[in-house]
Length: 265
Image 1 (cartoon, rainbow, N blue to C red):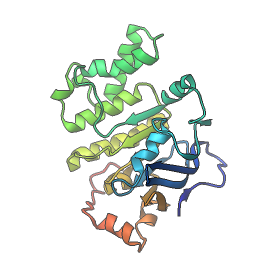
Image 2: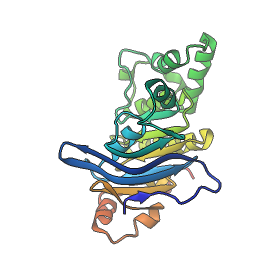
Image 3: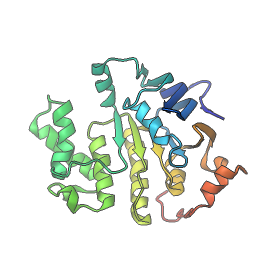
């Protein structure tokens, strides 16, 4: 199976659409004929082994990489066909939460958050920038960190500030690259709840790249697994993990931690 394509969208707008997507690096075929549809307000968790093409997929969707073949539409625009100015405008509608948070170490939290606003929304006044920073810090529960440096924050706090920095531009799409990687279970729960809060409050659509099955189960409306550059299976978490396929069973059996009772419903 290599398709997550839907036949129709009677009540929902399709915000990400790929058809026949292929990407290789030299002789290594990373993505092979990927079809994907994500509708507005939907979270998709993409699972797969390291090197399976998960991160390549979201880098293509965000315009950081170009596909070798196929069609990629984001918010109605074919992303590899538009010019630099249109691509920049589109990227402002896409929040990319990097695995390492990608904060500027020489800038305070306040400066990290103001940077994308000052760069991309130069019409905003000082009071508007201040309000936007206070708003997103409140959303991620870290108002007290305003004047701290990234080096003074815990790993979980850096993740949340990284998400806040994407939220400050009010994106329509969120791309999360291993949002709970390297975090303890309790902090991971906080990140999972934040992803759900962002989805609900901002009506974002998201792709969540993760090895964390608890994260996938709790944050995603739909789960897909990439094996050898194609979608092996997709559906709800329970539908995917009732499969007898050895690739799926191995993923489930490896250190799966059940935390249903700890996650906010």
